[in-house]
Length: 300
Image (cartoon, rainbow, N blue to C red; front, side):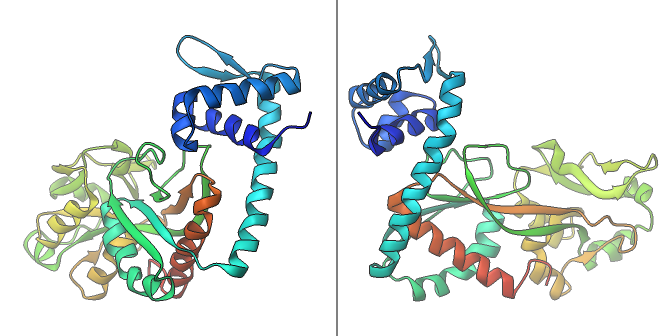
């Protein structure tokens, strides 16, 4: 008896979500149906794919090997169906998008009008979260993440890279002076992140030649909050180009250490779980973002 696509989808869903219960919710099936499907697949293959412990499911060596083939088969089927659907259907339905507040406000929101003009049948739901969102738990179709990706179960498409710069308002510089050396930052008010602490690594070398790590005088979990504080002249902040482009262009924020600053760029990726029913909507939205940003990069 041959393996079916339903069995492959159930197996991959259980692996990706970490449990039969979560997989059943993702697939819209009962827990017992997913369990039976998984059991039937193992019976056909005459091997154990998942080892069931009291706390979670773990892939066996055979399961890990079979998973690669299962993903490849499902991806091929998705691609074939997607190509056929693109010939006769326009993307439609609800698309849930997640991004950190600054990226949502400064990058995505300005692109929505153009996207809606091209794809009026797609209903957008835009959600902002400062932390890492679980796409399945939050029922998110596509998320935009900045920095190093850690979740290997996600498909990622590069959107661009945004440079980090140290910035201050003209009013702050007038009151406190322009720092000429990194060591002089100790005499200034530094605006930084409350978490994660790695965001307080600034693109400068310290006295030992290492990347400069600052202790903020005023901290916030939100980059947008730090931006507003910098605009208000409350201190010096280190922010990504995508959220300060207009501020720099209008002279509201002035880059510091032009000759000493390191060229450090944060990768921006669109991430999503592969899902046939939503793939066309995801693809057209990410394509629109990538194409539009290509005409106006973050540092322009």
